[in-house]
Image 1 (cartoon, rainbow, N blue to C red):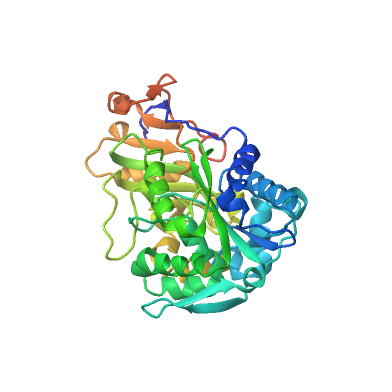
Image 2 (image 1 turned 90 degrees about the horizontal axis):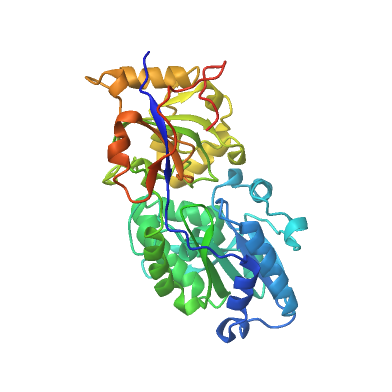
Length: 416
């Protein structure tokens, strides 16, 4: 099979950045409206989610140190729904894979799947909270604000999501996902509001990341201001989020998917696929065939998102932990995302199949794009005849001469 020749592209994105995470957090937490909520002797729970949030280990370690200096006794709770196989031990292991350990953060990690019910929303949806957090003297909700991978709305992935599905654990995730997209788009916000208004939340810590997977903004927010401020921060994030600089793609090759790159393994906003019945797909990019080569080690075999691809490889297939992936997808109810696509031996065979099925397009003219994952889009490869189109995007430049796709002895693409 003949493949198109490719060139390497570098994209330059806006890059606001928090240079000193601890100093920034100290400045935020020591503001009177935040510091006045912390009293000596308080046992304070800090939420830690399953996403690969930039410098989450540093954020949590810094918050532990700052709160201890204020006389409090902070500890960390894994705040996630079905991740880690929906077990207390599995969720601790997820945190460990993200660098969040008791030794590094200087605080105990207390993990349980037990919850208490705080009440119900106006429409009758139960509101749950992690029992350990509920028994503390207060909770600091920590999360990244970003675009959600299932829907569009004023609030997507952020502090309200962490307050609802994160603190509500598997039971809250089941309760909300059982309503489909409406449950996580609308009901999730209502549950999150109930939690932040419950009196148990001391404040939130929101991060916004730039396109280089770095914290661009860190902010401590009083509970009463979380909904308003999170909506504003989401708009700021959308001005920073990366994208592929090609609208029409025949074959998109993603080196690896993973929970550390996106909750859906591959960010649906990047690849242009929701695969949710009844939901309109993103406007761009429009991709005929998605090929994914591998699953990240940090995902521990949970290859949720592989169903967003059309082809995959044996090396990904053999790493699958079906129990972890199935628990995750059954909680979400979006079954398409865990369907196993066509499995072939290696990258070369996967690309050959995709190019062959690209009707009416001579193989050398394939509109081809290769990315390492959906989180890191500074560097990518595109077929050489796309150069003029790509370089029309602000900040995109060619950094290599045209060259053939290079495969190793196993038939897989050489390292990015």
